Image (cartoon, rainbow over all chains, first blue to last red; front, side, top):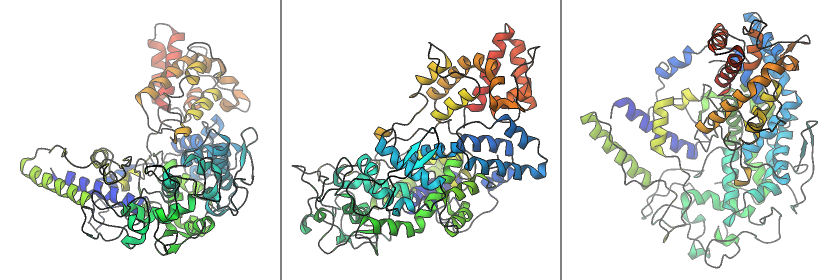
Length: 387
Length: 223
């Protein structure tokens, strides 16, 4: 194998590893694992330098994504016929107008249906409508995780209007989409793990394992890589009915150390997304018994978003996620990938080096997590208007 | 993880071997496919959704590293709903569901065109596929007569209330008409291709339909 191929192979491994634990983004834009130097003039940098600004092409893409339609002839000609030095302003003005257009609301509903993997049924659509409403109205993105009211919104495709509606699925204090009946119904599964996976992949932009530290050899076939104490999750010896501490083939705990500290927060939602007084998901063992917290955690362990971040209930989980830098970076990364025509950041491993979106992420955080502002920033970014 | 460590060792060994022979070694065939699946006797057998590292390597070789790919536009297909609006905004009657009309091909092409299946937790497919492109091109062929006839009446293709046409009275292609069809200003190449297609057809009407279909297909393969 020739050297460049080997470098790419190691890069492939590095990407797989980084995607599992790095916030859906690479920490540097370099492409070689273990290489701390950044070569600013490799062939890929040269290709980037060869791109040229084309506001005409950018306008077509922006129109299709932000309005769902081609630009009008008037818009096309206004950019094309503007003096070169004014093209950027004309383009930005049109894109800004798109964000205030009722068609943008429709596009945001579609964007969120795809992002959440939910739609075409009223309770599913109300989740996307809520997320779109938060986006279109310029509310903080963190409302998706913390809002206590109005989270079962409706969207009128005819008028483009959103209406906040309170969810009535029995939850005492809501936490945005985390307690939404549609999300709970769509991702119902054994032990609520599908719900946990959806939360992780949607809002943190990475697959499990979500937390990784130095590998430990605990005497099994597989190494343990999570930062939690190994016995912080359940096994038969602590009263659990699934052995999450098994090391005979794979290290279950590498993923479940995090998953088991989150999942108990979702086990009281039933198959229809209604909150009940007792666990309503089953354990996939003989007899299919209903889950108990002891199936996930030993006595004394508390539910947590991450190691050292205890979250005794869904509102605290939402608050912890809202404060997690990985969540805000993920939000911008999703907008970036949407703008640039990429597939889902997790499903297709379309990762983004942190430095590529560093400015947009910093502005997003400093500006109060307003996703609409991030969308404008991305659609007017240098990379977006170059081809 | 030992699984990954073994994979890396195997890859390193294969790479070392390859360095001496210059031949590309085939991917090892006895490596585990992921790290979430254990034997049925000792761990719950998860559905493996891990990315295949060999496919990822192939993608890196073809497309470049993330520091490059993340900064350049990809070529996603146009969303299903957007295709409908694009057609309607250029004069196509999507309500006409007669056989082999553009409306019919669009309405019945939902699956081929990659529409989402949220009931199965499947997003809209952003990839350009052979099936999707074939259906899209068929739609543009069927839609061409309607676009030619109705474009001037569409507000999206008017300036100061005056509509533009795809062709003038001598069957020559009109730049503004092409621009409105494509969503970008017509270039000299667009105009030349359009005129050649009309001129070389067996009759002008057929040539005009072909020109519209070809231009639309080329422009709208990617969003």
